[in-house]
Length: 550
Image (cartoon, rainbow, N blue to C red; front, side):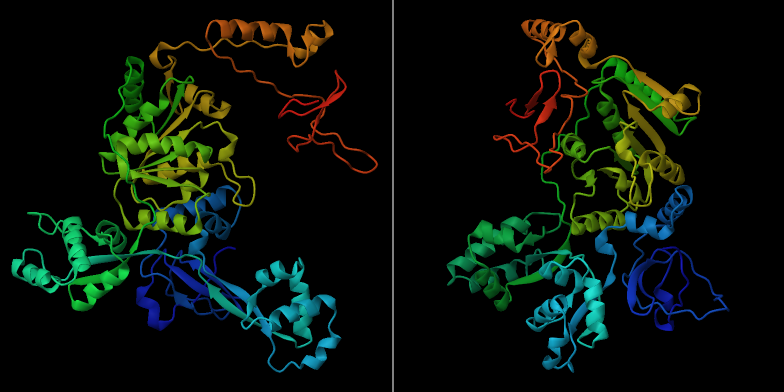
C-alpha cells in the first residue's frame, strides 16, 4: 500500500500529529492500521474523503527520522511505503480487521440438504459452536485450503453472515505490586500497623518481609517497589494473606505495566584491555571519524575487532547517544549479548525476528519512550527501530549475504540501509570484516571510506597454514582411499601429533546428495538416522553422512 488521504474528525483533531497510529476504513468493510505521514488543511476536491475511525495511541509510535528513512527505503528499493511499514513495525502494532463467520439466524435447517459436502462440513462446525469463528480457524478445523470459495457459496445461499472485527495481537505484561499504606517516616502509623497484626502470625511475617524488601526503614532514598510474587516468596505466605492485609488497609495492591525484558546478571563495568596494535587501530578510527563518517575495520580473524567495538560503544554511550550493532545471524546475538552485558549491563537491548510479537512491541516501546543511551544488538530488521539519538552504527561481518532480504518487499540490504540511517542521524558508521566485500574494500582503498587494518591476531597467534588438495587429480593418480587423499591424511596426522587442531573444508561429499527411483519415487534412507543416503560414484555406494553407514 501507498499513502492515502483521510479526514480527521472534529472530536480528535487536536490529538493527532505525524507518527500517530490510527485505524482507517479501507474498501467497504475492511479496517487497517495506518501511520500519519503528513497533515494539511486543504482537502482534495475531486472525491469524497473518508473519516479516520479512531486513534490508537496517545503519543506517536513512529519518530520523524523513521518516516524519512522509510521513505528512502521505499524510493531506493522500488517498493511502496506501506510495504516498508509492514516490514518495519512489529505485528503487535498492526491492528487489522478479521473476517468472522456465523450462521444466518433466519436460515432454516431444512435447507441444509441443498448444501454440498464441503458446505455441509462448514455449517456443521458453525452450528456446533456458540460463537462466530474467523476464517483461518474454520480452515484449520475443516482442513479446507480454499475456505474463501466455500464461504462465498454459503453466503450466496443465505446460510451464513459475515462480520469484521478489529483484532489487536499485542498484550502488555502487567505485574501486581504491594506497598505499605502509610508514608515513609511515619513511625506512629507503623506501630499501629504492627498492633493490628499481632494476632495474625502470617500477616506479621508478610509485613516484616515487605518492610525489608521495600527498604522502608532505610535512611534516605526512595522506597523500592515490591511485587506480590516477591513478597509471597520471601514471607512464605499466600495471596489470600496479602488480600486480607489490603482489606484491613495495611497495604495497597496495584497493577502496573512492565517491560518483558530485565537484566539481572553481574556487571563488571570494566572495559577489555587492548593490545598495542588494537590501541593503534582505535586511535586511527577516532582520527578518521574527524573527516569521514564511514570507516572499514579490516581485521584478520581473531584480531580482536569485538574488543575495539566495545571501546567505541563505551565512547558513544558516555556522549549520551545510542548504538546499533548489526550482526548477520540471530545465533551470533547470544554470545555478543553476554560479552556486552558484562560491561554495559541493562543498557544492552536485543532485537530480532525470533522474539514473539509481544516482546518486539515491548522493545519498540522501550526505545520510543526513552532517549537514554543504549546499545541495540540485532539482525537486519533492527534498522527500522525508533532511535532517538543514534551516535554509532556497527555492521559486523559486513560482507555477509544474510544482510540482504530477498523476499518479500522491501528487498533491501541492511548494511547499505544502516549507512543511510546513520547519515540521517549524524552518526558514524564502522564496517567490520576479515574478508570485506569488493565494493566496500574498493571505497575504502580509494578514500571514500576510512580504512583501518588489524593484521595481528590476539596474543600474537599465527594464522593457520592453508593447503588446497585437488581430489580429482588425486583420484586420477590413485592417491585416494575412501574420503580423503593421502596428503590430507598425512597433514592432519602431523598436526595432531604436534597437539594442534585441523579444520577440513569439503565443498561436496559424494556424487549426488539424493538417489531416487525413476519408477516409484522411492528414496533410500539410513536405517539408523532416517536421512537420505548420498551416492558416491567412485565407490558405487550409498552412504549416510551422519553415521557413515554404507
